[in-house]
Image (cartoon, rainbow, N blue to C red):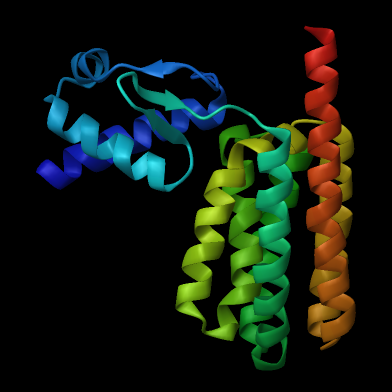
Length: 218
């Protein structure tokens, strides 16, 4: 029950941060959160430590916990790390991909495309986006690397949401995902990794441009 409460609180706070309901820089008061979720401070503290490990929360001495701020340098660093790990993993995965695994990735992509085209289940867009990418990386059988990739994608999640909520980002993502899957089916390691590298880095550039625009509009 104690672990369940901790996970429940972590999931709830994570969702609020990723949806933008808790803004970057906002204080996360443990007493208030304990009251909101009807739990003691212990699971709240442990939940915040979990989110700190994911990069969504930071602790300041004598001040407590805060939601991490949207940061251009952080975006660029996270996405550069994604390029290194994800391209490496995809290169190892492609020669091992089975038809069944490729078909599973295509099914996930079709579901993602449908949600993007119909603007349905917006909260789950980034989940399906990562599920598609993960399906392509899984055949590499690199569990430690996948754990790091998962952590980086969790930290990138709110930035990816910013991109996907714009029509241009949706159209670009759909096209590039289809091209990436086709290159994987063809066994083109070099072409697939180069497209993935551009896919990640251009997404970072798009997100930075959108953040600059938001700041100018404020």
